[in-house]
Image (cartoon, rainbow, N blue to C red):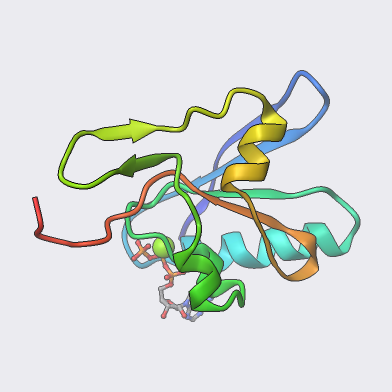
Length: 119
Ligand SMILES: Nc1ncnc2c1ncn2[C@@H]1O[C@H](COP(=O)(O)OP(=O)(O)OP(=O)(O)O)[C@@H](O)[C@H]1O
Ligand SMILES: [Mg+2]
């Protein structure tokens, strides 16, 4: 069974929870339920999907066209190299990469494979 594999108190008092584990054990499902449950209890939640094939936003009920328009932190532009975000401040990161979903959870993606096998 998957379980929180990292728990840290941030400098501003925020709590960071990392969920990882073997394939198909329910990481995405639990992450989605946890994020939305905490948001419903008035916590501010930012949910970062670090899977290269991210499904957290979809599992949380966001429409596919809105998910497709998300900008991951790492992007490949054309056939060139990958670029990481040039957003600097937390506000810029949220504005460029965040997508607000049900219950007010803000979703972000670390990276996303758009053409599997495309090199
Ligand atoms: N508690 C549960 N009981 C029954 N089925 C569940 C439960 N949690 C998740 N599932 C189902 O198990 C499958 C895998 O769940 P999920 O996608 O959340 O796992 P995952 O660990 O994120 O997988 P992956 O490693 O592929 O990202 C899904 O079909 C999901 O609906
Ligand atoms: Mg998953």
